[in-house]
Amino acid sequence: MKRIDTSSWGEFRVVDFFERMEHGKCGNVGMLADGSLPYVGTSTLNNGRLRYVEDPDGSLTSDGNCIALICDGNGSIGRNTYQADPFVGSVKLMLGYHSRLNVWNGLFLVACLDKSVDVFGYNFAWKRSADTLKAETVRLPITLAGEPDWGFMETFMRETMDKREHALAVLSAVPDKPAHAVDTTEWLEFKVTDLFTKIIRGNGTGAGSFLDGDVPYIAASYANNGYVRGVQDEDGSLTSEGNCIAMICNGNGGVGRNTYQATPFVGSGDLQLGYHPRLNELNGLFLVACLDKSVERYNYSFSWKRNGTVFQDETVFLPATSSGEPDWEYMETTMRTIIAERNAALDRLVMLEVG
Image (cartoon, rainbow, N blue to C red; front, side):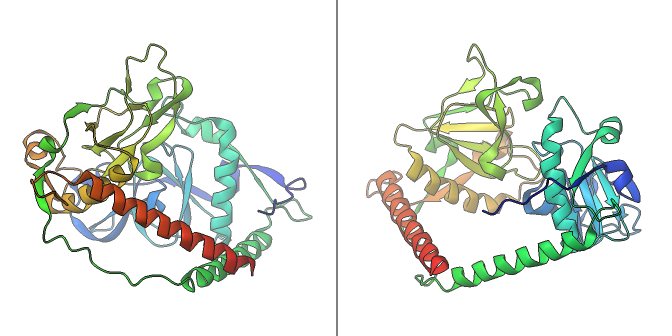
């Protein structure tokens, strides 16, 4: 990847850079009915869009064409997104506006803000507040007059997007087997609580309560497979064993979803961890896909959590042996084949791109 020469760039205070800054207006999205207006929360997943809501009188709606600076939240503090259209934004967002901003230089600016913010070390214990924002700076290309070079940012991002569109065209040209539905008519339904031989709750009390370290902290999120940061757990009392399914019971937009965790980790208290002696990475990934599909029936949300009797009654459809047990070998073999096919497709993509 080509490196950008930033030696001649200038440094700007974030609060001076924007012409107008204001907070998002929604403090409790769980109280809003479903609708057509994007709700943008404290996440970079799906560009911050967690659901669609109604705002009948427009009192909670913010203008689009802005940078949403994440000031608090689950693993994304200090990160940023560009919002093109009007939206309902979390009160934990600071929204930056400028008359020269557009989608192209906005995306460039997000990348610069994300890079510059690394030096501030924001985390659960060190929030991005009004005071810290006053000191926060961002490095940007500049004109001869020492002003942000909006034209360069737009042109660079247009060229970058053109290259990505070419790469997508190459990807589309890769031969692939036609998509087909999996025949699940012979699959059986299993209670999730019966599927695992052991289910325990995560021991973590929030990533912000830990010092930096080498043990992965897994949160109630499926972004980045739940990984938030590395933490210390010197006596190991809060560390859970790996090779398990982390089932998200509460959290910011991930309720009901699941991740496979291969290695030991500190897990959020909003996770239920499922173990089985036959589980491994391959059939674990297969199982995650089945759990994610089956759980769609339960419509978990901010106000309908995955816990108590609800979790006790949850079921999942799985391939089964003739004796009516989950077919762990079939799940492993199928996933091994799928991964091999995807690796071969990636190899063909590289050859087309190089050619």
